[in-house]
Length: 278
Image 1 (cartoon, rainbow, N blue to C red):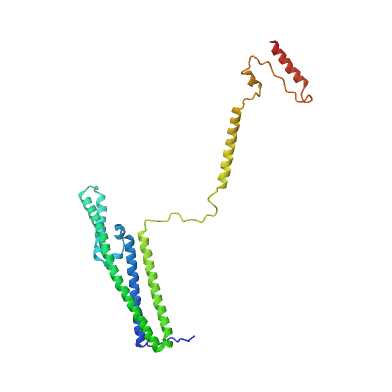
Image 2: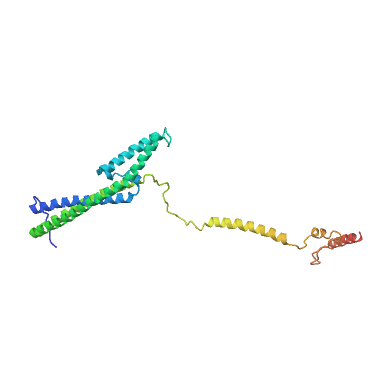
């Protein structure tokens, strides 16, 4: 590797010319960035006359600036008239037609302005390429004259050039952000998105509650349904209805003689005998 020493003091003629070309190239590149951003911005909203009337890009175009001013004046005047006059008033109708006329003129004027911007952009691009070639040629000449001593100086100047370009791009980015904020001023964030800490589905608690409720009510309904479909004879009342004339009495079941009282059995048979004699 070579040790490079920064050249201090007065620059020679070649180095001064290289510096002048660097400044001119920076200006040309900055101008190209500005023209390209203007063209992109206008092409994005060229079909929306209301947004076109609000942008600040037309400051260098007298026709579009005048249309913006006329539209703003007519719109303000119309707002004042609408407070005291109906929409069918002649003055209100006249101002409304004037606003529509301005809105119809805007696209054609914007197309003309875009054409002029494209012509300027083409000229700036050609100038930028020419300066790049001249800068490279000048650099080659200086390198041939004193390659080792000047190379470090060139690197510093390239760093300065890149820093200027970066600052220009950063400033332009901030301008575009401000412009985009103006065009979307009617939008606001109500609730910021939050990171979910648990899954949305399945909702286990709700599912358990619903299963319990449906199971309980379903079981009760099933019991009532089974009871309504059961035709078996279970009590004396089930026989007294259809067999009221034939029913004599009832005797308890004797599954085990040790578990049944003889008195209860005797009482049932006496009751049965009495009913039979009657």
